[in-house]
Length: 210
Image (cartoon, rainbow, N blue to C red; front, side, top):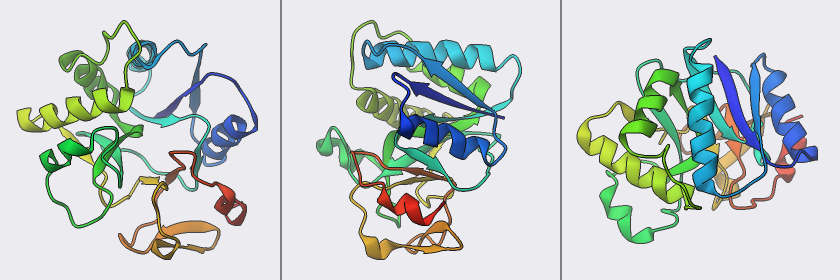
């Protein structure tokens, strides 16, 4: 089991992210490079997954500067699980292509996902995420790949109950509380392991979790 993250320029936030995973016993692999577009990022992550599969069965990918781990958890062993958010970004018009669910967190977010490394390699290869040569919107590309994969019956799901991943953008404070220095989702009644403050969301609540 390994955490894989991508960091362009180390700073206090990226150090906080990495340390939060290490505090819970995770091995963390940092893919460090100069940002040259999201197509390049996905290609390099694909190569990283191919290296990681030689020594690990499971992985979790997480964005590197706006993410915080509050407890240990392992991803599923039989499918890829993607983080979700409330907004169908960047193409609101395709929201209807998603299946109805009982929580407001229902649209794929590319900032967190995990599962078997063999499956993520197959997912990238089958749906072309490993071959972009120019800058692309990584969120859009992963979203469209997921929607097609779901139609194809590929083993991939969304974490709509926020069991592992919790995006914080567009959240209402009434949807959460903090108990024993852990953020809990009162809507899904879960304590997510990984908090993602996507969309430049205020991260000050982390002061209550340390």
